[in-house]
Length: 114
Length: 116
Image 1 (tube, rainbow over the protein chains, first blue to last red):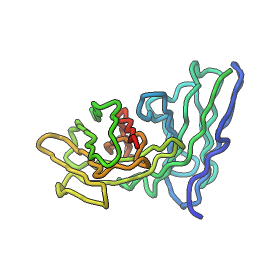
Image 2: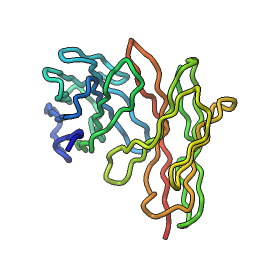
Image 3: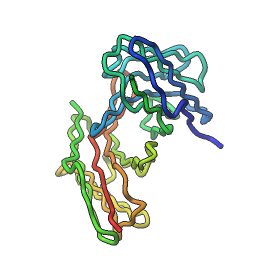
């Protein structure tokens, strides 16, 4: 089955801790994205990656970090520097960044800071 | 600047009623794409449609139809004979070229509740 998987589905973090959200895709897509969604809000771009070992900041990158060591994987770390990390995080992928091909989304991870 | 406005925050309809979700966009690009996504309670965004700026033909897919009008910068979405399974948040999005990459800017979404 081709698709995008995110884990865990729910994540709880204590203040001051870093946590890493997993995103894996087996669609052979080049580009991958991380978005944050807050209640009643649209999606805001955190980071994106066009190719392996390259990534760019989105609109709200502060307090987050990413890596892209493999084409199929794009993990997101929410650091202690992120002041308000409680949100729903969505990962997406697309076949080629330079085109307007459709972004497809994973099921999301809901992060709650205790 | 790119902007997508979904003025309807929440809509409630009774099952079998028709409902239209509005989307107005702003862009300086002459070539752009518009999208609609559905987010059911499970959270995953489901792709519904993509339309490019040169194709103003309306599109119909089953009970779903889309009306794209460049003159009013609108890309509205109509569900005919709504069903309870249509209850979800619907997002309109606009693609634009930035830093050599095509990105999406999303509206804030319209929450549709279909009451049995």
